[in-house]
Image (cartoon, rainbow, N blue to C red):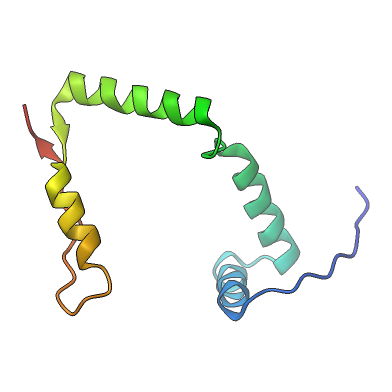
Length: 97
């Protein structure tokens, strides 16, 4: 397979993440980015309403089967605590019914 030279402008955080993956995986940056793009392409398009509907349906069926979930008020309290001095840990799923 041939190669193509592509120049990208990245923010410092993204560049640091790529460099950390390069060091951890022992691969070059091009391979790390190629792996990431391949993985991204394999994930459902979360902006596609059909995918969202299917995901919600599957999650609801799982809840109906197991009764395990997190109460909405706990999720809201957790989200509202983000960035505050008293940030809450994520609520833990548990048997609700």
